Image (cartoon, rainbow, N blue to C red; front, side, top):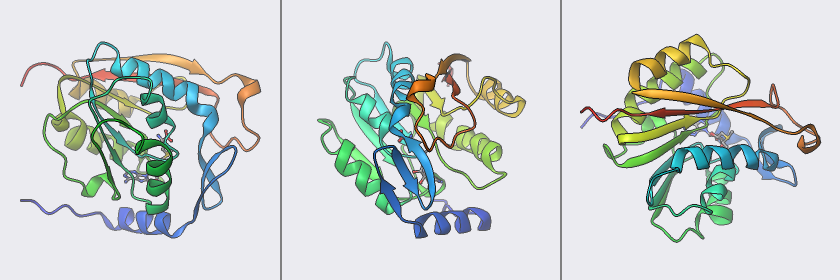
Length: 219
Ligand SMILES: C[S@@+](CC[C@H](N)C(=O)[O-])C[C@H]1O[C@@H](n2cnc3c(N)ncnc32)[C@H](O)[C@@H]1O
Protein backbone atom coordinates (compact mmCIF):
# COMPACT_ATOMS: atom_id res chain seq x y z
CA UNK A 1 0.00 0.00 0.00
CA UNK A 2 1.30 3.47 -0.89
CA UNK A 3 1.33 6.01 1.94
CA UNK A 4 -0.21 9.28 0.83
CA UNK A 5 1.58 12.47 1.83
CA UNK A 6 0.86 16.18 1.48
CA UNK A 7 3.37 18.52 -0.13
CA UNK A 8 4.80 21.14 2.25
CA UNK A 9 2.68 23.91 0.70
CA UNK A 10 -0.50 21.83 1.08
CA UNK A 11 0.42 20.78 4.62
CA UNK A 12 0.79 24.45 5.63
CA UNK A 13 -2.39 25.43 3.78
CA UNK A 14 -4.50 22.77 5.54
CA UNK A 15 -2.93 23.60 8.93
CA UNK A 16 -3.77 27.30 8.44
CA UNK A 17 -7.31 26.42 7.28
CA UNK A 18 -7.93 24.27 10.34
CA UNK A 19 -6.70 27.00 12.70
CA UNK A 20 -9.39 29.41 11.54
CA UNK A 21 -12.82 29.42 13.14
CA UNK A 22 -15.76 28.43 10.95
CA UNK A 23 -19.04 30.26 11.35
CA UNK A 24 -22.41 30.10 9.61
CA UNK A 25 -24.63 33.19 9.52
CA UNK A 26 -27.64 34.29 7.47
CA UNK A 27 -25.47 34.77 4.35
CA UNK A 28 -23.33 31.67 4.42
CA UNK A 29 -20.13 30.05 5.68
CA UNK A 30 -17.14 32.09 6.82
CA UNK A 31 -13.78 30.46 7.48
CA UNK A 32 -11.80 33.09 9.39
CA UNK A 33 -12.81 36.43 7.93
CA UNK A 34 -13.69 35.16 4.45
CA UNK A 35 -17.01 33.90 3.15
CA UNK A 36 -16.31 30.71 1.20
CA UNK A 37 -19.89 29.69 0.36
CA UNK A 38 -23.26 31.46 0.31
CA UNK A 39 -26.82 30.16 0.69
CA UNK A 40 -27.52 32.28 -2.43
CA UNK A 41 -25.59 29.66 -4.45
CA UNK A 42 -28.40 27.13 -3.90
CA UNK A 43 -29.84 27.55 -7.43
CA UNK A 44 -26.37 27.06 -8.92
CA UNK A 45 -25.79 23.91 -6.86
CA UNK A 46 -29.29 22.65 -7.76
CA UNK A 47 -28.26 22.87 -11.42
CA UNK A 48 -25.03 20.96 -10.73
CA UNK A 49 -27.03 18.25 -8.96
CA UNK A 50 -29.66 18.05 -11.71
CA UNK A 51 -27.11 17.74 -14.52
CA UNK A 52 -24.85 15.36 -12.62
CA UNK A 53 -27.57 12.94 -11.53
CA UNK A 54 -29.98 13.06 -14.50
CA UNK A 55 -30.68 9.57 -15.85
CA UNK A 56 -29.01 7.68 -12.99
CA UNK A 57 -31.06 5.45 -10.72
CA UNK A 58 -29.91 6.02 -7.11
CA UNK A 59 -26.41 7.28 -7.98
CA UNK A 60 -23.51 6.91 -5.54
CA UNK A 61 -22.19 10.44 -4.95
CA UNK A 62 -18.78 11.78 -3.83
CA UNK A 63 -18.46 15.45 -2.87
CA UNK A 64 -15.02 16.96 -2.30
CA UNK A 65 -15.19 20.17 -0.23
CA UNK A 66 -18.38 19.80 1.83
CA UNK A 67 -18.34 23.46 2.97
CA UNK A 68 -21.76 24.87 3.82
CA UNK A 69 -23.51 21.77 2.50
CA UNK A 70 -25.38 23.69 -0.22
CA UNK A 71 -24.68 21.05 -2.88
CA UNK A 72 -25.47 18.26 -0.41
CA UNK A 73 -28.77 19.92 0.53
CA UNK A 74 -29.81 19.92 -3.13
CA UNK A 75 -29.17 16.17 -3.30
CA UNK A 76 -32.06 15.61 -0.92
CA UNK A 77 -34.50 16.24 -3.79
CA UNK A 78 -32.94 13.33 -5.73
CA UNK A 79 -33.03 9.68 -4.78
CA UNK A 80 -29.38 8.79 -4.30
CA UNK A 81 -27.79 5.47 -3.36
CA UNK A 82 -25.05 6.73 -1.04
CA UNK A 83 -23.16 9.91 -0.19
CA UNK A 84 -19.48 10.34 0.68
CA UNK A 85 -17.99 13.76 1.52
CA UNK A 86 -14.42 14.93 2.08
CA UNK A 87 -13.81 18.07 4.16
CA UNK A 88 -10.59 18.73 6.11
CA UNK A 89 -11.90 21.46 8.47
CA UNK A 90 -13.39 19.66 11.51
CA UNK A 91 -15.79 22.49 12.44
CA UNK A 92 -17.06 22.84 8.87
CA UNK A 93 -17.49 19.08 8.55
CA UNK A 94 -19.37 18.84 11.85
CA UNK A 95 -21.77 21.69 11.02
CA UNK A 96 -22.61 20.39 7.54
CA UNK A 97 -22.90 16.85 8.78
CA UNK A 98 -25.35 17.83 11.52
CA UNK A 99 -27.37 20.32 9.47
CA UNK A 100 -27.53 18.51 6.14
CA UNK A 101 -25.96 15.07 5.86
CA UNK A 102 -27.27 13.15 8.87
CA UNK A 103 -30.92 13.34 7.76
CA UNK A 104 -30.03 11.51 4.51
CA UNK A 105 -31.80 8.18 4.40
CA UNK A 106 -28.87 6.44 2.66
CA UNK A 107 -25.38 5.29 3.74
CA UNK A 108 -23.24 8.41 4.37
CA UNK A 109 -19.60 8.94 5.17
CA UNK A 110 -17.73 12.18 5.94
CA UNK A 111 -13.90 12.05 5.89
CA UNK A 112 -12.30 14.91 7.84
CA UNK A 113 -9.10 15.05 5.78
CA UNK A 114 -7.85 16.74 2.62
CA UNK A 115 -8.70 14.72 -0.49
CA UNK A 116 -5.00 14.18 -1.12
CA UNK A 117 -4.83 11.88 1.93
CA UNK A 118 -8.06 9.92 1.44
CA UNK A 119 -8.01 6.47 -0.12
CA UNK A 120 -11.22 5.93 -2.08
CA UNK A 121 -12.57 2.75 -3.65
CA UNK A 122 -12.03 2.26 -7.39
CA UNK A 123 -15.02 2.66 -9.74
CA UNK A 124 -17.39 3.19 -6.81
CA UNK A 125 -19.12 6.47 -7.76
CA UNK A 126 -21.56 7.58 -10.46
CA UNK A 127 -21.17 11.26 -9.62
CA UNK A 128 -18.25 13.35 -8.30
CA UNK A 129 -18.46 17.07 -7.39
CA UNK A 130 -15.19 18.95 -6.74
CA UNK A 131 -15.31 22.33 -4.95
CA UNK A 132 -12.27 22.96 -2.78
CA UNK A 133 -10.14 25.85 -1.68
CA UNK A 134 -6.56 25.13 -2.86
CA UNK A 135 -3.43 27.09 -1.92
CA UNK A 136 -2.79 30.22 -4.03
CA UNK A 137 -1.26 29.27 -7.39
CA UNK A 138 -2.24 25.59 -7.04
CA UNK A 139 -5.80 25.58 -8.37
CA UNK A 140 -4.97 24.19 -11.83
CA UNK A 141 -2.26 21.69 -10.78
CA UNK A 142 -4.53 20.40 -7.98
CA UNK A 143 -7.41 20.10 -10.43
CA UNK A 144 -5.24 18.08 -12.84
CA UNK A 145 -4.03 15.82 -10.03
CA UNK A 146 -7.56 15.32 -8.71
CA UNK A 147 -8.90 14.32 -12.13
CA UNK A 148 -6.05 11.88 -12.84
CA UNK A 149 -5.70 10.40 -9.33
CA UNK A 150 -9.29 10.46 -8.02
CA UNK A 151 -12.03 11.33 -10.51
CA UNK A 152 -11.02 8.91 -13.26
CA UNK A 153 -10.08 5.93 -11.04
CA UNK A 154 -13.09 6.34 -8.73
CA UNK A 155 -15.85 6.98 -11.28
CA UNK A 156 -17.65 4.05 -12.81
CA UNK A 157 -17.60 3.93 -16.61
CA UNK A 158 -20.18 6.47 -17.79
CA UNK A 159 -19.93 8.35 -14.45
CA UNK A 160 -20.05 12.16 -14.34
CA UNK A 161 -17.69 14.74 -12.87
CA UNK A 162 -18.38 18.42 -12.19
CA UNK A 163 -16.63 21.26 -10.42
CA UNK A 164 -17.35 24.78 -9.18
CA UNK A 165 -16.51 27.25 -11.93
CA UNK A 166 -16.79 31.02 -11.64
CA UNK A 167 -16.83 32.98 -14.92
CA UNK A 168 -17.83 32.30 -18.50
CA UNK A 169 -14.94 30.31 -19.96
CA UNK A 170 -12.87 27.30 -18.97
CA UNK A 171 -9.11 27.95 -18.95
CA UNK A 172 -6.91 26.21 -21.55
CA UNK A 173 -5.21 24.25 -18.73
CA UNK A 174 -8.52 22.80 -17.53
CA UNK A 175 -9.80 22.18 -21.06
CA UNK A 176 -6.67 20.12 -21.73
CA UNK A 177 -7.27 18.02 -18.59
CA UNK A 178 -10.92 17.42 -19.49
CA UNK A 179 -10.07 16.61 -23.14
CA UNK A 180 -7.37 14.18 -22.07
CA UNK A 181 -9.29 12.18 -19.46
CA UNK A 182 -12.98 12.24 -20.33
CA UNK A 183 -14.95 10.81 -23.25
CA UNK A 184 -16.91 14.07 -23.52
CA UNK A 185 -17.65 17.25 -21.59
CA UNK A 186 -20.05 20.14 -21.84
CA UNK A 187 -20.73 23.39 -20.00
CA UNK A 188 -23.98 25.21 -19.25
CA UNK A 189 -24.11 28.85 -18.18
CA UNK A 190 -25.76 30.03 -14.99
CA UNK A 191 -26.11 33.62 -13.76
CA UNK A 192 -27.05 34.59 -10.23
CA UNK A 193 -29.73 37.32 -10.43
CA UNK A 194 -28.44 40.67 -9.13
CA UNK A 195 -31.22 40.85 -6.55
CA UNK A 196 -30.07 37.54 -5.02
CA UNK A 197 -26.48 38.70 -4.53
CA UNK A 198 -25.59 38.66 -0.82
CA UNK A 199 -24.25 41.86 0.78
CA UNK A 200 -20.81 40.31 1.45
CA UNK A 201 -20.46 38.58 -1.95
CA UNK A 202 -16.77 37.64 -2.39
CA UNK A 203 -16.65 35.72 -5.65
CA UNK A 204 -15.23 37.26 -8.83
CA UNK A 205 -18.46 37.08 -10.82
CA UNK A 206 -22.18 36.28 -10.71
CA UNK A 207 -21.67 34.26 -13.90
CA UNK A 208 -20.86 30.59 -13.60
CA UNK A 209 -20.41 27.56 -15.78
CA UNK A 210 -21.71 24.13 -14.88
CA UNK A 211 -19.25 21.67 -16.46
CA UNK A 212 -20.27 18.04 -16.85
CA UNK A 213 -17.54 15.59 -17.91
CA UNK A 214 -18.38 11.96 -18.63
CA UNK A 215 -15.97 9.07 -18.15
CA UNK A 216 -15.76 6.74 -21.12
CA UNK A 217 -16.91 3.15 -21.10
CA UNK A 218 -13.55 1.73 -22.23
CA UNK A 219 -11.53 0.13 -19.41
C1 LIG B 1 -16.34 26.64 -1.40
S1 LIG B 1 -16.33 25.49 -0.11
C2 LIG B 1 -17.33 24.17 -0.70
C3 LIG B 1 -18.79 24.52 -0.73
C4 LIG B 1 -19.71 23.33 -0.92
N1 LIG B 1 -19.56 22.77 -2.25
C5 LIG B 1 -21.14 23.68 -0.66
O1 LIG B 1 -22.01 23.35 -1.50
O2 LIG B 1 -21.43 24.28 0.38
C6 LIG B 1 -14.72 24.80 -0.25
C7 LIG B 1 -14.41 23.78 0.85
O3 LIG B 1 -13.26 23.04 0.47
C8 LIG B 1 -12.60 22.66 1.64
N2 LIG B 1 -11.24 22.22 1.30
C9 LIG B 1 -10.10 22.96 1.28
N3 LIG B 1 -9.06 22.18 0.93
C10 LIG B 1 -9.55 20.94 0.72
C11 LIG B 1 -8.94 19.68 0.36
N4 LIG B 1 -7.63 19.58 0.12
N5 LIG B 1 -9.74 18.58 0.28
C12 LIG B 1 -11.09 18.68 0.50
N6 LIG B 1 -11.71 19.84 0.83
C13 LIG B 1 -10.94 20.95 0.95
C14 LIG B 1 -12.67 23.92 2.51
O4 LIG B 1 -12.44 23.64 3.87
C15 LIG B 1 -14.09 24.41 2.21
O5 LIG B 1 -15.01 23.96 3.18
